[in-house]
Image (cartoon, rainbow, N blue to C red; front, side, top):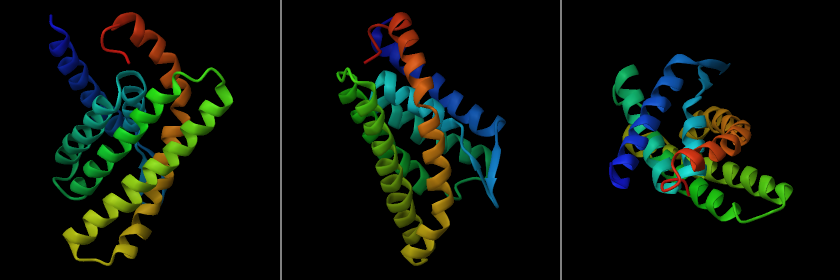
Length: 178
């Protein structure tokens, strides 16, 4: 099987895992919001396979999840936000793999998670929803604060999982792991 075919299959598995974890493991944290555990899959893909794979898993995972659950409501902004999050995380993870000191690397990872989720959810998702629903931007930001906090927590907690699974990805898929 060619490397390109393996990469397509790998991304398809990631999308399926994103949807499955988002649907099957719903942990409520706020009044009407739950931890989206699909972000663990997205983080692993950003860490091990780069920004393109992570962004595709996050974006298309959200599209499929939303189509299964509630149609297109909320999907465009969330999908676009996940592209931003996936690209930024993937680039930061790739750059930090060269660092030998774990504490500065962890600080960078947490900082880039907070920044990328803020841009993806509080800015991109809120602006998209503001345009789609003709609501003021600040109202949408207020509604998306729960998502920002919950998604940031899931991504930060997933960092050790990323490091562990990256070792396995390099062993199993040396041509695809970055």
